[in-house]
Image (cartoon, rainbow, N blue to C red; front, side):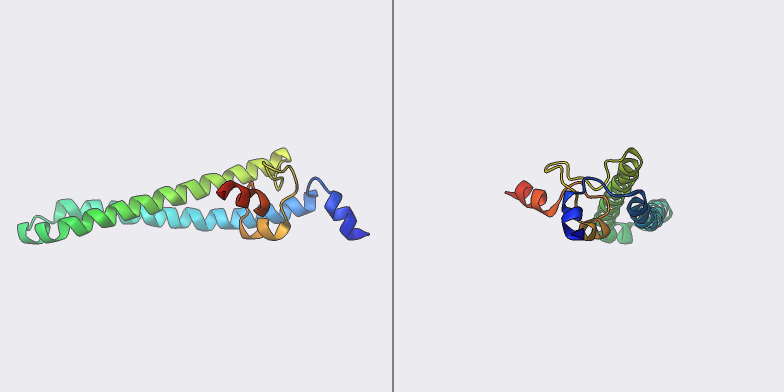
Length: 131
């Protein structure tokens, strides 16, 4: 009987939403620390550019530094996008739309939300999207 009740459920309870909010806040804190580290790494690599004026080392390291900066910039951009997605998930918790698939309108399983707390798609919808 309980399983049937779960299938008919259209929203998560306040208690369940608190669990998801805690997961999101923890991931958000970690993600922000990683972004801060990436930004600091970028800042340090830019500072070392002006300090290093040796022509030989400049020629040899220029390409490698450029690739490293591009990589750090890309990682920072991805991390910022992840943070934005987590913040949007917190907004969905507050407005009562969290955990509802934007394609099917059904509840996204808890297991998926625990693994990818910022998702807006069920596995079913995600697979359809890839076709």
